[in-house]
Length: 247
Ligand code: GEK
Image 1 (spheres, rainbow, N blue to C red):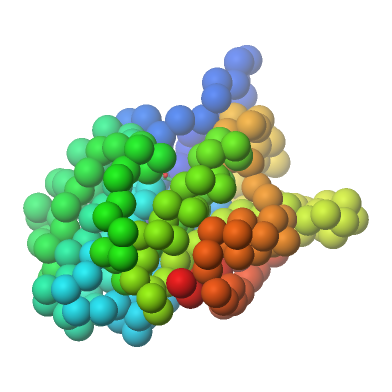
Image 2: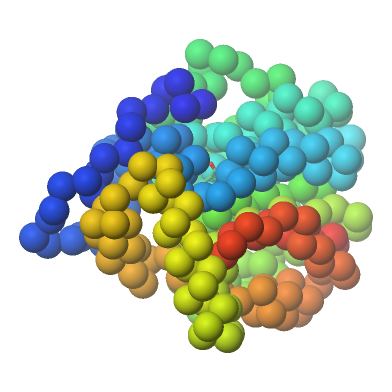
């Protein structure tokens, strides 16, 4: 998808005022480049989302891509899920993201039926036991913390027995030393990908109180309370991880 992307230079010049980060048109324009150079293992996580969906999808069920952005996870699932009667519902509350996702999918129709929906994922009404796969790749971290428990409980309720949630997140660590080290390593990863120290710092300020990471323990607690029977870490690099939670 990086073929469609300009290079991310949004924070390359010094800004006097740093506005709260939002998924507007300027972000959409550079998004594939931004996410690849910012999230360690992004390509692997997207590709394996397709592999996991292929394994756990059930005939005739729904697959959800929540916070779909330009639809990378949707496209990965559509190319690998073997059941032609599965339908993907891809949801995002950024109009700019969805407009671009729609253009990309019109130009390259995916192999499964996809419904693109502009909505806040907290307002989506999930039919009970209708879905076999739900994906939240780097989305829950943007949902206000007080709303996360209820969202996950509703999502667990939407899944069929044996269905899965793929949950990828930036995480925090309870131990301050480990938190510092993993954050520094992530910044080194970004510098290695061409971001300057000033860009990293300005972006971090824009994301303050917008992207709110939690610890792995907090994610495990929430998933357990929501009704997931197993939680496995299947990918981890620095302060980023991906979980598969089985209903
Ligand atoms: C990918 N999954 O390429 N409701 C709906 N959408 C939301 C909400 C919400 N409450 N909050 C944030 N979003 C994608 C990447 S990006 C991650 C996901 C990142 C949307 C927001 O508009 C954005 O498109 C997406 O979640 C997060 O794998 O930029 O770090």
